[in-house]
Length: 260
Image (cartoon, rainbow, N blue to C red):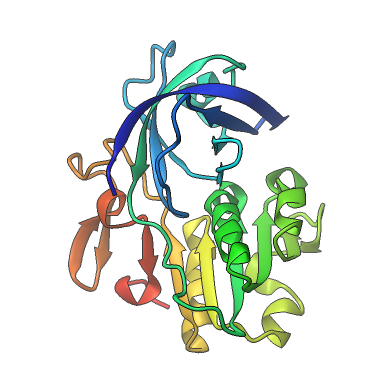
């Protein structure tokens, strides 16, 4: 897909709490086509310690309002500065980058599981929107360390059935997503999509492989350039080492060399 360098205007900055915010961006022109699982590179201005653009997953695209949503986990000077943006601020972006999730070609009785952990829920919401528009039967499994890592519940509940786990038990079931007491035991899924911490995705991948379920994961390797030049985000695959930013970030688990 063609890449665009765009100056986008902040419509709203929704601050969930001290660790996450949601930037809603728009443009005077129609936003380019974007796919679930792709990401953008954001130029952070006004931060002396931030020299490189920051890769942020596409959280949601609202075509009616011509809005692009970015869910930001606040972890360093770059994201701290982004969390301070206010309505009317201009954000320079390169969009879209990478390859997204594979959308099933036809609607069947296929039941689809979408798993997200922490900020990894971001691309899962957009993928759910696309699948819901195609009338698929969707189940979401969201996980986090605490209840503060579970966000946008209202948006997810519009798209399908939602299950939640937290490591401390502050919301939903206590434990990891793959330890859910009933969902993964009693349900049969035809396709799984996942994004989150690598240990979580490896566990989901093992669950899928053991049951011969087609599964795609969106990797969160550290990225710098976003175009495959810096080699920061290399991942070993069955075909050799590849750059996640250009060959991914979405991979079928059969492409990866994880010990699952």
